[in-house]
Image (cartoon, rainbow, N blue to C red; front, side):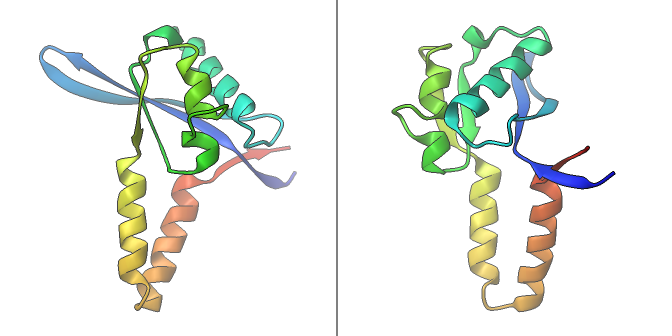
Length: 130
């Protein structure tokens, strides 16, 4: 048995319940084949949303990092998701913006840079066993 990294689609849902905003982590699904192709990432995300009984047509907003492959408006994940939910809006992921700011601030402090690298790898890596 060995560990292999994979590309994952992670889904969190934010909703209003009793006049309070709530957010829950729904799941993390590996994109197969190991791919960052927009059609594969979008398909995996839609499958994940549907697998927990949610309707992808009701998606109101999505947040991703700023990679053109994901956030681009023509043929990218954002655009493909808009085919399922026409009024969908895209927001640059706030935690990713914070990560970028921390990395820039830590550039002059190697020890902090190493800690942030370890946190980033452990927080964003998705593994499966084959």
